[in-house]
Amino acid sequence: MRLLSIQFKSLAAVIFIAAIIILCETLTFTDLVLTKPQKITACILLIAACLWITEVIPLFVVSFVILALEIVWLLPEVLLLDSSLTSQVFFSPFFSNIILLFLGGFVLSSLMQKFGLDHKFAYLILHRTQGNAKTTLLGIIIACTFLSMWMSNTATTAMMLAIIYPLLNNIPKGHNFRLGLVLSVPFACNIGGIGTPIGTPPNAIALSYLAEKGVALNFLQWIAITFPLLILFIFILWRVLLFLYPPKDLVLEVNKPEQQKNTAQHWAVIAIFLITVCGWFFGSLINLSTGTVALFPIIASFWMGLLDTSDFRKLPWDILYIIAGGLALGVAMKLSGLDRVLITLLPLDLAPAWLYFVIALFVGLMSTFMSNTATAGLVIPLITSLQVEQHYMLTIVLVVTLMCSMAMALPVTTPPNAIAFSSNIIRSKDMIRAGGLMSLIGLIVIATLGTWYWRSIVLLVAP
Image (cartoon, helix red, strand yellow):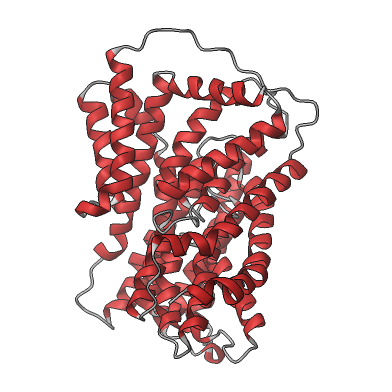
């Protein structure tokens, strides 16, 4: 029966993809005024979105579907516009800087689990919270948020998931709080990314384009802009997860780790971890990208024999391809010009309050089906090209940037979501339920309280 179910789902996916392709090739879409490459990209986006949401086929396979359609269907049309392009432009996201960053985070997580450091950290958290489920959840959210303000939220997610796995082992498998505990990590890391300029790539993209327009925000100004919302989102996330996944009378327990003297290997793992974190902190000062820094734990771990080939094979490779598919989709939208078409659909003549809401909704939808970095890279340059006052443009850019981080409804939406999905504890529907609610709340808060705060307080001291 299970085999028949899989075959039926596969057949349904093939029929759906074929139907979309046939419709795209036969319908004229005259009302939309789209070029052929833009129509094809829109269809690929629709196919990917439906397959991601329904999970008719494994999520990592969807990325290969995207890649195949881009090369076979989109590339010939794009070549008519720019003959210098090759298929490499669609292959490159599958081993890009963000993919290396992922891989480095996975290796750090594997190191911590193999040498029991995750168990020690988990016991330390429980010792502080006395096993109270609600307090422990809040402690994990605060820890993830704080760390993600200063280091990669992708790496933070990988590390913190490794830390909470021992907690999950002592929670009954059917207990809903397991889901809440796992979801708290990526969602808190997404939220923490908004707190500092280095927290997440969309922040850096926003600051670079604002600087070109003469709006230069320093480190402290950025924190002043985002910190009140950060605190509010922490509290909202905590209450949302407790509402959706109540712990009831659950008392968390984890066995006290054996008091063993750290070996040379343990100290080597700690050294690799600290050097990598420092690299993510200060790598930009010596022109090292986060992906380049992530090469260090990969090389050092296997070169020193801390991890072996079997550990390498156990890494969640499928997650790397899930994110690569989202990045490849962003490349297609940029090459075809569909991103610019979508921006022109925004009703810029609306009153500011409504415009903020519409832009937040637009960016939230885009960032849900693409990576937040790709969305920021597509939308922010177009927003900064608008001929509006600097303070007005700054508010719109902040709406876009923060909404990129607050969209968290699918595994493909953000790197932290994808890593959490690799735990095999949560499914897409779990992330859609909690992440969708957080996205909606984030949209409302950013478009109302956020814009009010920026206009009435922060912008008085901003350049």
